Image 1 (tube, rainbow, N blue to C red):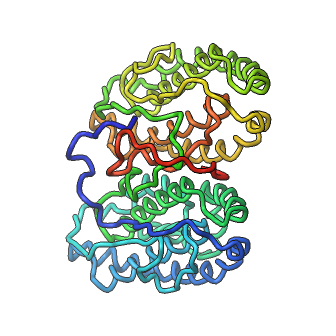
Image 2: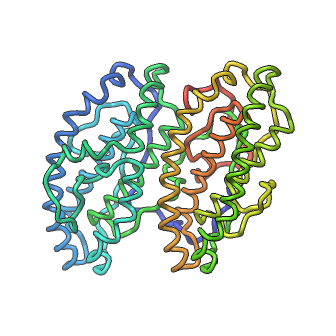
Length: 443
């Protein structure tokens, strides 16, 4: 099932900084094999550009503070800089195939559109370095601290030095780890997995908006909603699907005491997890013999996965009501639907633990974002009594992927988890069932 429509008026207008993806997923094995070496000249140029960007950012900040608008020439400079940073990372992370130019001009398969300079609030400009911190932390957790700007920060940061080499050292991010998995997949298939490409495209878009906000390209805060750029639909129907009926409202009282209220669930979760592991071992042997998980074990483990999703949705403020302890279906605003037991490939079953490792790596990346958003959302929930739509959807995506990963590991399905945020595409039909294709190396 698709997530229900969000309340109007939240992130409906178009952001001034957008990423457009025209990539065809095809990859050259030769350039993939030498991708890091080929990117070295780009890194060197980016380091030099970052040094200039740091010093010019101070001038741009002072001028914008006085005039209420970034000068056209400086706006163009930083637009090219952010665009080049996005092209560089798209190339390095295999999100696109062609070698990018050094000028940051439009036309790359993963490109950045940036609106012309517009009036900006002087108050936002004055405190821009502080206001940008949460967005830069989230961007750094995904793409790396150097993904859209110099590793030492922006106009309100007094550190210096290091330039591109500091950037290289701090760019070992979650996306870099996933890119290693994508590297093997591209070498084998000469094609980038759809889901990973869309995951990277989302991170690059958010990073471009975060650094564009810091460098005064816009005073519109970065939008965490994974609906843009639109993700592809999975190649095969999903056995685990997101059900989202949250209204974004939060009780300030329960938000304040959220962790304490979570403690009874934590105790129950520990006991249920121990039982789930024994059930998973029994299900593994049975599935290996019969080619199908036993119905009783499937129902038990499905309830466990639903319960984990509901509990973490509550803990990280993805939903507001206190969840039940049984993992019952259709009882919570944020949960997953899991299909019944079906036939499973015995070879996949035999090596399920090894096959699930890449999915757990990707899940850990999204869970890092989930933790950060839950932390930021706690302050927002206390102040506003609601959860921003974009942050809620990002967390829901992370929870869905985690549920898919555990469902795959626990033999609830042998369909590999799909990492792209396909549920949040702007025009996804509720009952879309694309033509099945052979299973990809990684979704």
